[in-house]
Amino acid sequence: MQQLKFKWRDLYAFTIMCLALAPQAYAGGVVSSYSVMKRALIDGKRLRVVGRYAECTTTAPDTGLQVRGPDAIAGMDINNFEIFGKDSSPYGQPYIVTSFSHLAQQGDQLVTHYVKMRFFEDGQVRVLTKYYQPRTGQLTDLHDFSCRLGGHGLGGGAYIYYY
Image (cartoon, rainbow, N blue to C red):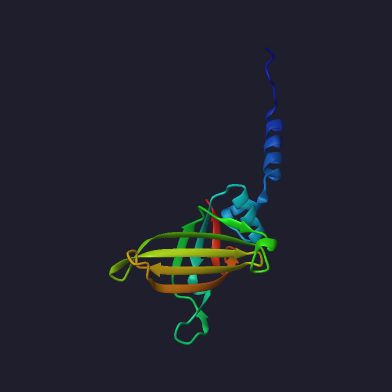
């Protein structure tokens, strides 16, 4: 059996070459565009969304005007999703949708909290949150936020990270 011989400088050069050719879309752990998010999901990457609602707008229930969202931050992992192309989208552009629900404390009672997020190709993000009575299914609260996909320090309200 012949023994493989190599020089350290060759190993160093090979390592540098591999690092240079590695996909840069995932560098830094921040997703800054729809196309990067789509590619990451298709590639099986794990993503986490952090919503900063104060950077989003919502409709005020008493006036119907668009106002800044509340000073609240929420996070969720994207464990399930669907990707719709332009031809199958009722919105005229491709989008990605994900949702989840869990029990939450609202005041002195438990409610079912449902969150649906739609990420559009143009960077717009729509976040719909609903609160239901678990026993009756009665809707107790509803919020519809309009955000933008943001990168580190860019603002926008919807931030996506690799983990």
